[in-house]
Amino acid sequence: MSSLELQSEIRAHSAWKHKFEFAIAGIQTEPLDAESAGDFTQCRLGQWLLANGSRFAEHPMFQQLSATHTKFHHVASQIVSMVNDGKTAEANTLLNADFNALSETIVFQLQQMREIVNR
Image 1: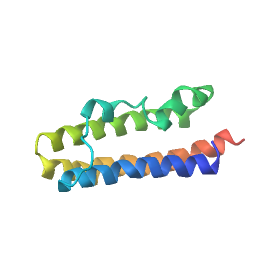
Image 2: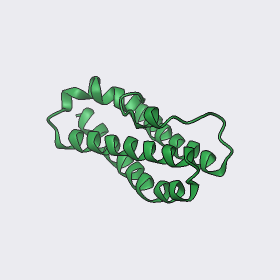
Image 3: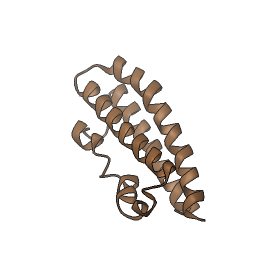
């Protein structure tokens, strides 16, 4: 995973937050689907974890990143469900707590994985 790919993944995960902020504010530009948001295999990081990253499957950092990434998408799905149900205050709380924490953890773990991959 190169520095360029790492930055791309960080931006992609940041884009989720902006998408949710717009949805919570009622200014979303596209409908959100909870099932899609919860599918960790559909984003680029999920695809990397399943394909190229799988050669590191035994490494503890890979396992931690995979687990965090799965949780991230689970929380994303919960946020979308809340927004779709009109529970924007609850969605905002989850976004600013669990979602942000998971996003920060993913960024840290991606940086760690980049070092492992580049060895």
